[in-house]
Image 1 (tube, rainbow, N blue to C red):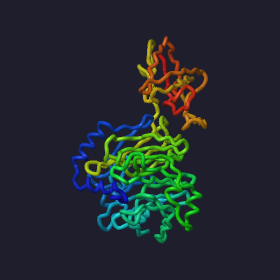
Image 2 (cartoon, rainbow, N blue to C red):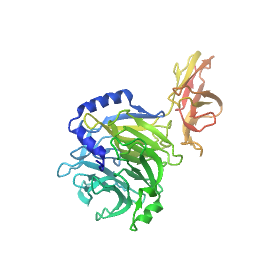
Image 3 (cartoon, rainbow, N blue to C red):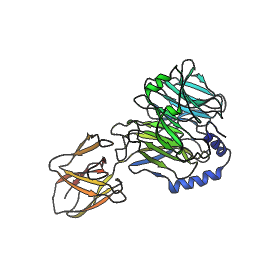
Image 4 (tube, rainbow, N blue to C red):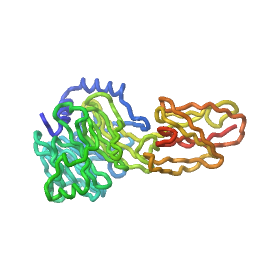
Amino acid sequence: MKTLDAVKAHRRMLRAGLGVIGAVALLGMTLRAQVAAGYETDTIDAAQPGAFVGGFAVLPGGSYALFDGASVVEISAKDGSFVRTLYTPPSFVFGAFIAVDPTETWLYFGESSFGNIVEVELSTLSSRLAANVPLPFDLAFDPLGRAFLSWTDSFVNPGRVSLLGLDDGSLDDVILTSDASGPLGFDAAGDLLYVQPDTSSFPPPPDQSELLRFTRSQIESAIGNGELSSMDGEVLGLLDGGFGLAVDESGDVLVSDSVYSKITEIDVETLEERLLWSVGYLFVGDTFVDFIPPDQGAFERFQPGTSGELVTIESDFVSFNFARRIRPRRPSLSTTPASPIPVGPFVLELKDGPANGFALVLVGGGTTAESQYKNSTWPAPLFVGLSFPPFFLLLLPLDARGGFALNADNPGFPGVTLGAQVVVGESASGPFFGTSQPLDLMFQ
């Protein structure tokens, strides 16, 4: 059966009682789940086990909105605790999406049981029916604040992407897709990113779902003037599947896969694909995703933890519903013994850098506030927080675990403090990925 989402059908089967699959998959997640090097992750309980989570978004202020199978609720990003109910449908529905408009004034909830798209004012919680569409799948706003909807009119027909008039519920088709509906998003330039799934079998065939890009000019040309097809999109990558889509601050596309249980990042400039997160088992997967832009840096490996955050719902649809957060992590620099370092030998150690990469060890006259440095050949800026002079530099290879242990000696420098920091990269000539926290070395 070619469905709007074979995934939805599978989720309903699981929810109906296939608890054994959930238990086995949970064991698999415990044994095999992994996050890519240069990132860290944590989870909180987002909804009760077995709840059919049908939509997720990060709210203004940082809390989370999700549809827990009964209501759209706001939960704390700190611990998942209930904050308030935002909207309750008049009857049971299967949720499709939650989206917040660019002004952060309105929340939109779409459900696929009756096809209603409801607008909720976040300040007052007043709600109204904004549109009725047979089978809505995903909603995204372009940089002009216009809403675009991924949907279909039956379980057996291909999907489409339409400009949705939120004032009158009107639909203007801009893309007629070749298969079932998929997730969509926009980059800062106004280009539309869309995952065209392959539902010729279930699970879907590996490497047959396409990440497509339609330029802003293409989209504008189709508004009110006919439709584009999937063939008009530029193929940026081939995926095993796709359920949720987010775009980071640099335009990289982050795609969740709830069947193959992973998150893939696609660099739209280099077309490099990188696995950010993987459970390693079918059907214990990540579904809805949202991206929190960085306070500094970029959402790239080995950057500071404030360099953006990807939040995704992870569920086996039977026994757990987590909100998983993935953020960059810097390499860790330390000494043994810790400062103040006594007279005699000590070890300067780096952990969690790029495997088999290189490290530049910088030593200066102490630590200071970090400054940001950027080069066009680096994927992200470097943050350096050392006082100069004095200054010297060491070049060291990293082992297969991304670290080194440098044996050193304190011959007796009472009261002297130096600053050390490590720059990590792919090779001695770069590209460079990030830096460790600057570390004061206080000698006795």
